[in-house]
Amino acid sequence: MAKKIIALLVITALSVYVFFYAVGCARDDLAESLADYAYTGDISREVPVLMYHKVNPDPFVGGYGLRVTPRSFDRQLRFLKKKGFHSISLVDLAEYFKRGRPLPKKPVVITFDDGYLDNYTYAFPILKKYGMTATVFVVADTIGGINDFDYRAGRQPLNHMAGWKELREMSSGGITIGSHTLSHPHLAEVDPDRARKEIARSKIKLEKGLGKKVDVFCYPYGNYNQRVVDMVRESGYLAAVTTKQGLARESDGIYTLRRIRVRGDYTQGRFIYELSKWQRTGKPSKAI
Image (cartoon, rainbow, N blue to C red; front, side, top):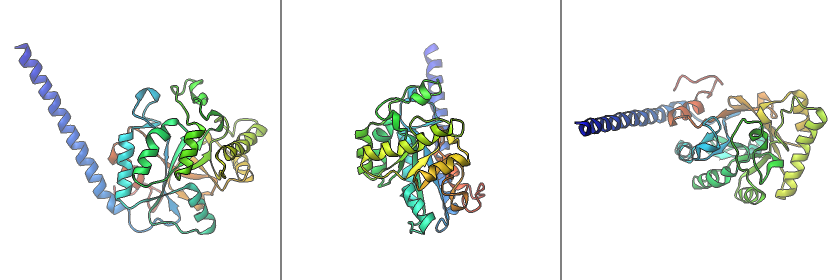
């Protein structure tokens, strides 16, 4: 009798799992179909810039706030490819806003903050699989080390950061490397001299290590003020991104570009919704 009850419970659990899995797949398929209505024509003067941090299957390197699994990342890029999106670098976007340099139809910028080793181990092969590029913002003093800026403060588990070998290989493979400062401070809250050093010297260090120019910047924690923005511009960067949500628009300022955050707990349908909802008005689209 007990065996029959256990078997019944197992069958019931499997049935429930299959049901919700099927519902989830159907919901994602519906979202992909509805997405066709949100993507009409060229994106003009506003471009989606996706914000990632870690791509890693290991739950011990962090929660879903910053970590996307390789499987989810693969599905997301496959969707972008299927819908005719063309990945560009943040430098390409800066040149478009500044000089009118032509962009492909339906451009998208893929960015990674911090410079984790898993960007090389997991994300880079998937990007190559779909013929896409990305921009990786590196905390220059942590190259080849660990995430001191979050780990020591207890905000994140220990993570290994990409080394020069990995950064150079990604750079040679079409990935744009940008600066995320030397040590990841809250730039608007530290002494101005330190802020300037973090911004300017990280650029110099990365350029020396990579043997090429570093033209783009990302504000740690999305923390900045006008003084910090001026420092970024004066240090010779072409553009900078924030953590403010929305499409990147020239009207927001080339040094305060918005992005769309991608969380690891997003279903495929939620990813499509987040990508689609800002189209046209900058407010959630009614299409999805």
